[in-house]
Amino acid sequence: MPYMIETWDKPDHQPLRKQTRDEHLQFLATHAARLLACGAKLNDDGSDAGGGIYIVDVDTRAAAEEFIATDPFSRVDLFAQVRITRWRKAYVAGQNFL
Image 1: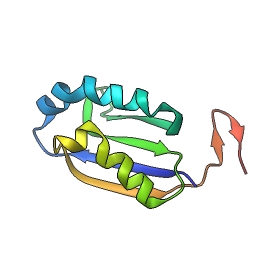
Image 2: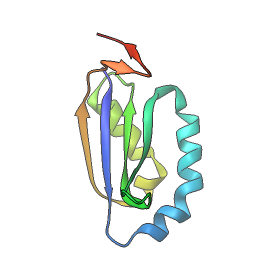
Image 3: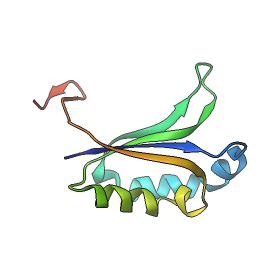
């Protein structure tokens, strides 16, 4: 069962996010097979809102916790909050999974 992981950055930590971004993107590439979707949250004007959403295809909450804990953004203590929610895959890329 997939899990949705939503993160919120600590205030005024945009420089740390930018500094760690390349390492974070490499982490995502390494784990691409587990990712149903992921990306940064944005403000309406397209600027970075300071956080992200990951939908990961893992079997347990513990696996989702381990996934986000090993993200370089976690390693540098970027996140003020992380919320993990079990998610039911209904439609992905126009395909019905129900």
